[in-house]
Image (cartoon, rainbow, N blue to C red):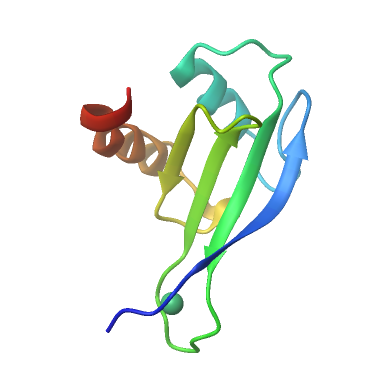
Amino acid sequence: MIHPHEEHLVEEIQKGEFSFHPFLATWFRNAFGLEQIETLVVYEISCDTKDCPIEETIVSTKEKNLFLKIGRYRSKISKMDFHLAIQKQKPTSL
Ligand SMILES: [Zn+2]
């Protein structure tokens, strides 16, 4: 059962942390060796299907040259979720 999911822009920050998570921006910057001043953007992937279990969060740089998809709702991302996402992505894009 495959149906389309849409990306929705959640938040864009120039510095500091996202409003919904105390560490996510720092984890992302550290993992990718970014400067504090780099603009970060978060997207949420969702759909209108009621029973759909998909809850995904995408953290990226403004230019989208760095991009991490995390299989968890944005405010519930643990450090382990983050590391698993990094490891999953490594072979292709890091
Ligand atoms: Zn869905």
